[in-house]
Image 1: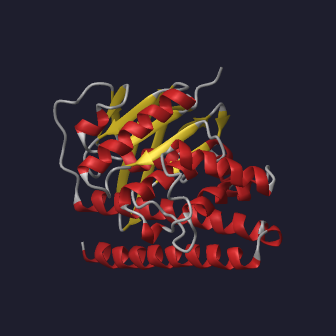
Image 2: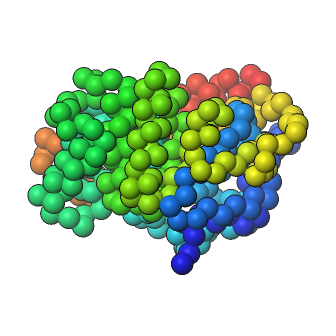
Length: 302
């Protein structure tokens, strides 16, 4: 049986121009087994977001291999990577990335609609069951703006589970909620990991959060360790800026993939639902583009 995640001597170098290069990943070797719950911990700028992007097929390595569920995705085209992300990987983002005009139920239905494998009735029934699983059966017809941060994150978790992926990737899943709500989210993730036996990879800088996983890896200066390293260098402003940029670009790719899937399913969607979803995604894309442009202006001044 193949492992859900394997990285073999994976290297990622970002060339910023002007002779400035960032070694974000320095020969990473990592194996995560089926059903494991793993936290990858480290300070800002250590490369953990870049690592998550590699596993999620949101970026290509400069060298080495990335294997997801037995499939080598190292040199895959964007079209094939989009299919891998849709079928094998569930994403839980820090800022939820829900479509604001849609209800919780409709947000959870979206990945299944894009996959095109179930009937409309099957999609709705499954979305209802997923929301019950995360404890939101009383809130399924509410929109994100009518829900708390913790409720929105639970909707995001249900959405991540929709297509029964083998891997769930969570980037600071408690970073946008208060501590008490954060612990509830972590307990939910633990319970789902035990019940569904999916592989969870959680990115965090918080040791308390990391300890809820059965295994912890530590990242420092683009390298990964099974035990806490004794020392680490403070990342430069270039490194921190590049990590932030890569996080935003990863979300941008995810949203673009969702828009492409939406267009393919346009003929089978209710026109009003299609317009609402597209408007929601378009607003999120515009927000991200503005953030990237603003970040680019700051980078030029560094």
